[in-house]
Image 1 (spheres, helix red, strand yellow):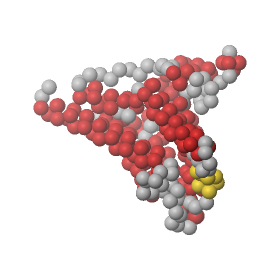
Image 2 (image 1 turned 90 degrees about the vertical axis):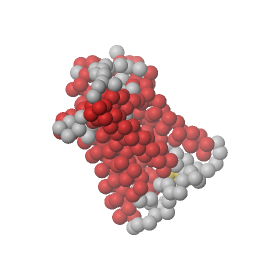
Image 3 (image 1 turned 60 degrees about the vertical axis):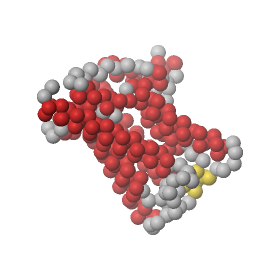
Image 4 (image 1 turned 30 degrees about the vertical axis):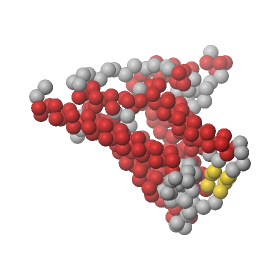
Length: 252
């Protein structure tokens, strides 16, 4: 390996690691922002700063930006365009990097809205709901490792190119949670944003908007999976529910 090639591959590797760490930090901040934690200087339950209509409009724009980036960059037509600019091995890391940046933007500029839909402080319900909120995010992370966490976040791609090894072909597999539901990562996110002992109107707006984004995003992801895996995935759709397990009678 000559020096120029080594530097190029090393740069892509560092880029991928940086993208992963930034996205990881953004996700942790995002999760904590939705909770009522005393060590956080600002959460989604901070006092309202703007008139309600302005706060709602800004929040809608932020989630729309998140959805356009997340869903748009995942489409094949965008990937083909992006590969004219960056190496193939850096494509996923670029998606991860921009996803992390947009998530930071959403959290930083989100406008809280006063008023409580519910606020539960009595035990054991407070502890149970807090545990449910944490479990949702934990479940989502575990589900990412079940498929391939490092490929999902671009680390596998940059590491293989650094080692000058080809990336293996993607193989459809049904493992653990994926034998019962097709999108356990998104289930974890939905649990994390809905199950909470405190639901302000600002949190409710956030939860509704992100739920809509997840449903729309899954529609396009399902189309991509059909195109990539063909009849194998279509059969999987018939047997396994998208977000809820199918009853045995429906699988026959």
